[in-house]
Structures are given as C-alpha cells and as structure tokens.
Amino acid sequence: LTVKDQGTPLKGKKVLVTAGPTREPLDPFRFITNYSSGKMGYAIAQEAKKMGADVILISGPTNISPPKGVKVIYIETANEMFEEVLKYYGDIDIVIKAAAVSDYRPKTYSDKKLKKQQEVNIELVKNPDILLELGKLKKHQVLVGFAAETNNLEEYAIEKLKSKNLDMIVVNEIGQKDSGFANDTNIIQIITNKGEKISYPKLEKRECAINILKKTIEFLETSS
Ligand code: CTP
Ligand code: CA
Image (cartoon, rainbow, N blue to C red):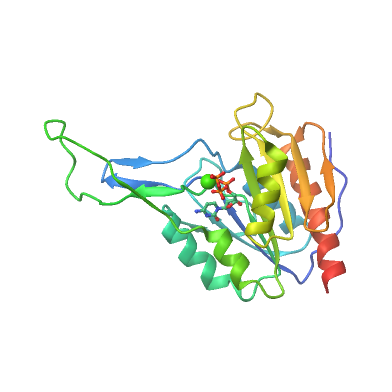
C-alpha cells in the first residue's frame, strides 16, 4: 500500500515537532517516564519533511532512527525540552507537540545511587507546561497540541485547546489496543479553535500524520 504523494505544500515553512517521552531522573540509574514510543511524532516529522518543510524534531529517548533530512535534537527531561523549544519558537511557522511530557519530576536528584537500606520517599514537583507557555507567547505560529486521554476525551481536549491557546488539538485515546502509545495505528479526532470536530477511523500513524498536517496547512492558509 502506498500513500499518495502529497506534493510540497509546506515548502519554505518551518515546522517544529516534539516527540517521545521525557525522563525525569532520581539517581544515575532510575527515572520516571511513560509508555510513549515517539512513533506519532516521528511520523509527523517525516511527513512534514516530505511535504517540503524544514523540520526540527525535539525528541525524548525512543528506539526510532532519525527521519531523513530532519534536524533531530535529543533531550531527556521536560526542562531540557522546554529550553530547546524556546530556542527555536520565535522563528517557527507550525509547532506540533506530540511529546508525552512528564507532568512531574523528582524534587531532588541524588548523584549517588539510592540504596535499598535507606528509606526512600520520592517527593515530586511540577514540570513547566511547555505548551501552555508557548500558547502565552504565541504570535504568528500555528500551535497544535495533543491530548492523551482514557476517558471524557472531547471534554478534556476542548479544555486543553482553550486553556493553552491552541489552534488545534489532536485527541487520542490511550490504553486501547489500536490507539495511543506504542501502537503502529491510531484512532484520532481533531478539534479546532473554530469549533470543527473531525473523527478519523483507525489508521496507520503515517496516515494520521498526513491528516494532521493537511488540517494544519488549512490553518496556515486561513490565518495568514
Ligand atoms: N504538555 C507540555 N508540557 C507538559 C505537559 C504537557 O507541553 N508539562 C503538552 C503535551 O505535549 C501535549 C499537551 O500538552 O501536547 C497535552 O498533554 P496531556 O498530558 O494530554 O495534558 P496535560 O495538560 O498535561 O493534562 P493532564 O495530564 O492532567 O491530562
Ligand atoms: Ca500530562
């Protein structure tokens, strides 16, 4: 099966994608993370490149090889991701935040391995909400977020779309066999700040990526 060539509608556009999980270390050997595989974000980066964009991919640890022609910046923690995103944000046309950023990190980092003899209480502190901050700083950028939900999908997604000042949000149900983290397929819904809601059937992540980008391009055209 080949997906029809989309042409190069993103020629001359700068696209920033974040992907994968973050890792929040406790000591040199242990960290807090989540099940994100990075597949969705990498597929978006790759398809954006094929559509002619200059693509920067800011990625947490994954097992995926870097997409051809894409500038990849590897990070581990949410704070590192935040710092890298801010370096490029001003100059970017489209930001797609597919990364599963850890909401919390351990308050303290021990540079010596934690020993089982000692009593361990892990105190957590909140990480910055990168997307929320980008929403506050938004000028010309088209800002696309993701919402990973297990329940009340639409309600939570619309809340995120509004509170983070997004143009569009991609909703995906996690914890399902054919959708969400680690799968090759995804079942997504796109909700825009114009009140549009589009539901897609189960598709390969590559096809999801094309649909997300096509919808984003419409935004670029109507907002400029
Ligand atoms: N996000 C982010 N920085 C964070 C947390 C989330 O940039 N510290 C981004 C994600 O990349 C995603 C969007 O915000 O594009 C929504 O993430 P999600 O985890 O679904 O929502 P949260 O706002 O973190 O709320 P909650 O986890 O409570 O549902
Ligand atoms: Ca979260």
